[in-house]
Length: 441
Image (cartoon, rainbow, N blue to C red):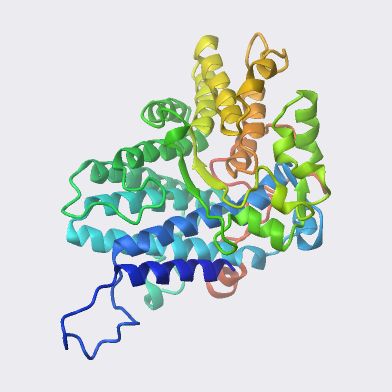
């Protein structure tokens, strides 16, 4: 289904953007096998692929491991109890490398040559986000030698530190490109910000804030750097870096398609119990009518809707990140509280629960006299339901405190895919319970 969706969108866009050549010119060329595709045609496929991958297995597996949802049937019951093998993640690995990063590279290369700065900048933002996600789950990954094709089928693995350095570099250069002239070609084919480069620049700052926060345990200075990035990022949820899916059977959101076609996952009582203890009205939206699996009433789920927008960086998330960074840098309780409550309010507003906000925060459990890191991360865990960022938060902070479903530990990374183990002798030897380098908790 996913590959058909990618190819269908790609071909339809390609058909729109191709134009007829003058009579007899290029008669020996096959029009159905173009040697070059415009950046405007490639850009939406990169955005779609990134959003789909981020909201598919990355979302489902990580939200199971932080006990927001629960795998209840077939292989998902196994994933829930940490039974997974290298081949389970082969598709996720190749989807990011081929569908997202390689295509972003094509946009960057050909648009740099043509001087189309806004295409270069937007593709650099997408590439930076993708590299960050990959290293957050796999730690060392191939990069500097990864795109040589048949010239190098066994690329070296670059360290997480070097990948993060590249993420920061890409985001900085992207902001410069997005602030420059368009080079004679305005940004089109953009399904995230629809050509608004000012929002792309804000998104670059938001992604950089996420990156600095992930690196907080590596150097305390990164918390201050994250605060600076947050101040330059989103002003409200209207600026969010997200991708909205459609209402057709083949264009539906990833979670909706999964619940409709498989439905092996349901709401997790660990999150449910915390929300019940706070009389949290968001639970009724998250839990799928509290049925066993989401398959039973998939079309009535209020959160995993057919046209759900995939959140990749949001104002809500940044407000909780700001509260955490202020705690880490000795900020005042007044400033910490402002960011914390703004995050909660933004979450309620995004779910059309504005009227319930005041009652919710009136509870002492939600509004203690002194806010702690546990308060901030717990509310972020509730607000960012099924968002992969919660898995990074749990690994960094150990919060919320979770009891393993099986054995004595919760996985802290993905296994390298079987394709790499079979073909590349440079792949590191790891287990599910080895930490990525920024996770020194």
